[in-house]
Length: 226
Image (cartoon, rainbow, N blue to C red; front, side, top):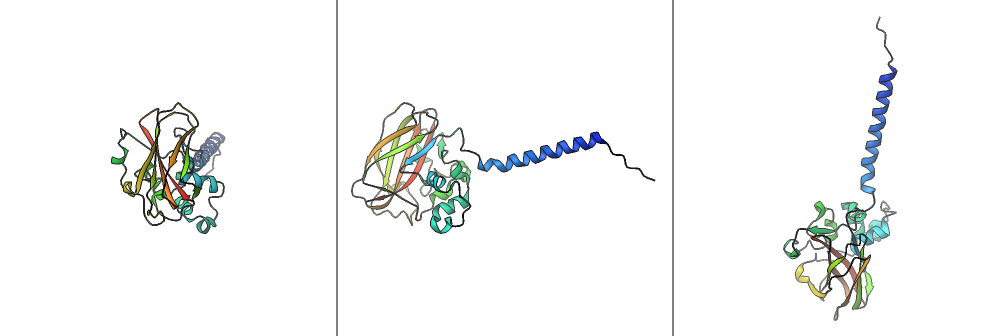
């Protein structure tokens, strides 16, 4: 007759291993919902960038099916990659030596050339993105969480006749209107912009060179000039 031996030491060991496995799995599940990347910096707060706005509006309700009808461009962005919103402050490229146009192809400007392993690709899609109402004389506000300083801001605005709802953004669609000088570290950097002769839905494309490294940020903000 076979007698089973109950080893308490083995049972405790198995229980501990099981508990550790559960904790590890829980940690992995938590990763996509963690706070924004601590090594990243910021985005345009005004006019708000596409992914920062989607995070502000839907971050606490991103699984709401009503988003598909109420805010379809944010909906498709959340469907593509939720981390594009959770990491709203990490849309940058490194190593361009300042020649960023050579690294970012047409139709990929809003994702900075599919940076972040394609995380931000949905931001390139044209469509009825929600807009901020602006006069043609306005101020861009870039929010820098890490306070690394700004070598410059460059602000481009799409030319009159550009259709933001059907045409993915190209360099040829833009006009460079403002370039700022270097400023000391702060939470906010500002650029005054004048975009005469424009009306309706346009894209404000802001390029921010952080001072601490060869790291350049790119922000697409949708505006309605009134």
